[in-house]
Amino acid sequence: MSITQQQLIEDHLRKRKKGITSWDAITDYGITRLAKYIHDLRSTGFRIDDRYEFDGHRKWKRYYLISAPKAISKKVKK
Picture 1 (cartoon, rainbow, N blue to C red):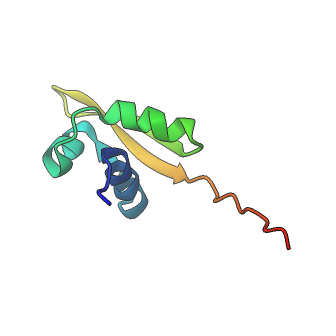
Picture 2 (spheres, rainbow, N blue to C red):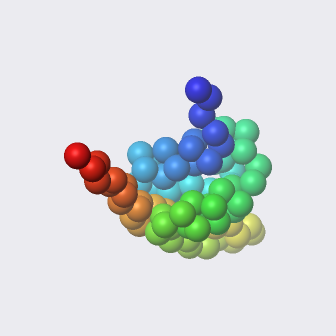
């Protein structure tokens, strides 16, 4: 089974407290549509915060994982 780009972003957010930027996604994973995957993760219950950063010339957004959805347990009938 191969890992999807969305799974790569989710894994990055879970493991790295510094969050992720579009540049991180491009250089680390070759992913150019970070905002789309953030949107998709949010729509499945992930709470992801974002903040703009500015270096005097450029502005970009950094995304941080606040919480992930809890797994839904299924009761097994006996």
